[in-house]
Length: 492
Image 1 (cartoon, rainbow, N blue to C red):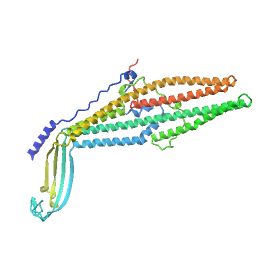
Image 2 (image 1 turned 180 degrees about the vertical axis):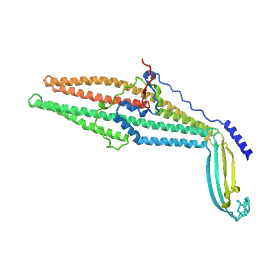
Image 3 (image 1 turned 120 degrees about the vertical axis):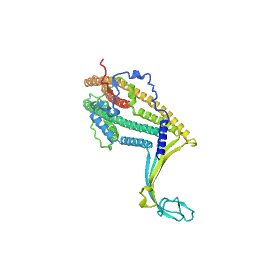
Image 4 (image 1 turned 60 degrees about the vertical axis):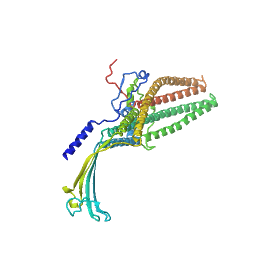
């Protein structure tokens, strides 16, 4: 017994020392940064945020407590986020399942049988019937006896070629990919909530503009009707003004309808039933701060994007499965054993004479599998190539997305400056046209034209301000979250 165990232990040690995990360890592929990227993001004013999930903080840059509350509620109540978190737990359970193969597998069984040997046979295999001490090798035909059995089964596969370890590595990477997908769901949700909120506040401001326009036009209609009654204005001026009053009044219900639909969308995003969210009207420019962004952003921020990290985790899993597929070409060594108690009488079941055991190694060497192993390896290698190309493409698209948003933000800043100048000039034109009309120097068409220009300029300014906020949200999303100012930047 001792000699056999020593030989078995020495054999196992030798095999372990000579074992070799199949496949190459993962190496991150080289990523070429676009030539123009350094010029686009040339700055030292930012640093990578240390938080692993920056999307949990970036919205605070807008300095709006109401928006922050809606986002926090959405992260807690949104059903897509809850489903993504459940998938994360599923992925972690898969890792546990893949890891279990590294450890011995044991099962305990117990049974009772009443056995009758056929009378039409010469003899049957059997055990002691209790009529004499010691077991019988053969049972007499027609013999009936009981069999009490309990056993502990053991099987332990020695992972010399790394098949199980590579499988676990792949499962860990798959779980990480699921976690990054959950981050992407949360980041998209935060982005959608922010954009929906900004759209509602833009509509609030447009409603405010429409109501003010209606009041002004109604005031002008009253004036023109009085002037027409004394012959100082024509009936045509009255009708033109009535048309403008009806036009302004018609804008209000359509804007209110659009706001209600956008509110319903926001309610679903935050996990609420449509019609349960009461957002008081607040014009966009009174509730949202237009945050300033750094001149440029370091390209390393792209490494925080969940889609890139998810693509890389999938690539890691594909690389590990190549090694797993290679390991199938090599022998499988397992330690199997069984030990327990066996007796023909219950009273002797738990005595020393009822004990039995068997233990030893078993080796399975694949000889002919019909091409299964080759097909498995080819499939794993092809899958790796696919994931590599997908990873590279994801990075290119990420660079493009950030570059597009940065370009838009720079253009929006200049556009806002010009539109503010346009609105200021339009307001002055309305003031001058009103003065000249009241003194009879111009006809009412000049006043109408000035008012229309002012309304268009103010509406377009609000739209551009909301679009810039939307672009800002898109930038946060494109970077996988926000950024933090560098605390150790040298003063100029």
